[in-house]
Amino acid sequence: MENEIITADYAASKKKVDDVLALQKITADDLSSLTRMERDYLSETITDSLNSLKGEEKDNFLCKVDAIIAPASKNQFWEHNHHLISEAISRLMRQYGYMPSNNAIARETGLSRPTIVKHLKEYKTSPEFAAETERFRFMTPKLLAAVYKRGCEGDMRAAKLYFEMTGSLIKQRAGNIVNSQNNFLQINNTILSAETLQKLSSEQLNQIEHMIREIGDAR
Image 1 (cartoon, rainbow, N blue to C red):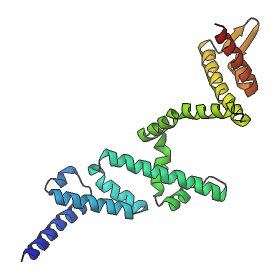
Image 2 (cartoon, one colour; image 1 turned 135 degrees about the vertical axis):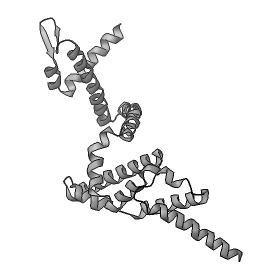
Image 3 (tube, helix red, strand yellow; image 1 turned 90 degrees about the vertical axis):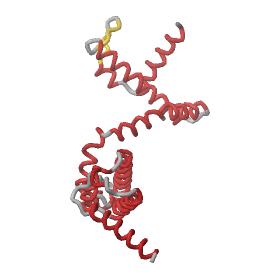
């Protein structure tokens, strides 16, 4: 008798969750009548569906449950899609030697073509992309220090890379100065414009950097 009651309760709870999942769009109000156990069951069912569905079926299901998905989960979906798309592009380019089409990326990832198009179009304005870019930027000094260390140990390629990187910084700074001074600098009778700086080689920029450092040390 007790088992029959448990079975009946389970069946009633499952029907309530199935009725919610049958809705065209699920909102927070639709969950108000669910118990904690039923909410957990709904969450597990949604997770299983997202893991099994692909392409446009997955897009349609995400649209259905969008209003009840937490922002943190949406961020995880974006990061997961970004990883899938990045890996697929890299893998297909290694295999075929050219940039794959959106259809090829969709087939490789299991994502829909509209999702691929939307992600590629909007990823630069996404907060998640900005956060990812900042993480890479945060690691730049550590990488530069590692290159500097290898150069000091006698690795000429590392030394060259270090000077190219620091020379690029000098070039960027010089460009900023030029822009603030009507697009040129005049030293005696010599005019140093932005166009001139852009034509300088890495070696020439390094020489300028070296002279600037000597002036700074003399002070």
